[in-house]
Length: 215
Image (tube, rainbow, N blue to C red; front, top):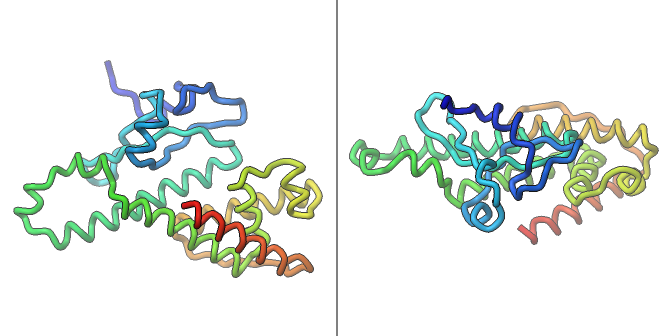
């Protein structure tokens, strides 16, 4: 039987990593998770996939996880950002290795199990991106962190002190900025200072500090 591509698996799978059927507003995206998470949380083996690394014969293990469609681009950017960091870290090690070292090292196995250091890099990239937003666009930073905490709908609008339309506009702007930052792009961030700008910044910093402690 011909092996399915990752996109074909995504299109036909229909369940989350824990076997729960996807909701109508959910899509599957690639997510980097460590072996402990996989062994203790992933019950549907089909959600574990090996992602080909461009321009190499290597693959990296990933989990297909459900996210709300509105966060699909952010989730994809997070995985791509982690992958780029991993490849950069891997390449720097390749430069310093001797030919004998490379022959002794099993590349496929290495690719399957990225180190804890790689995972820290990915989390640091997210934190750095949020800190840029806190400095340059506090409203977007606060919106992003509220979404991380699970706020949505009228609850999100209330926390942002915005009407529904203004809230949607702020969300779309935040998603665009965060996606670009996580992808490592240099972008110009413009913000309109309002009477809530300082409050947004203080609240965003507080939430970020709480998340960092949890990590």
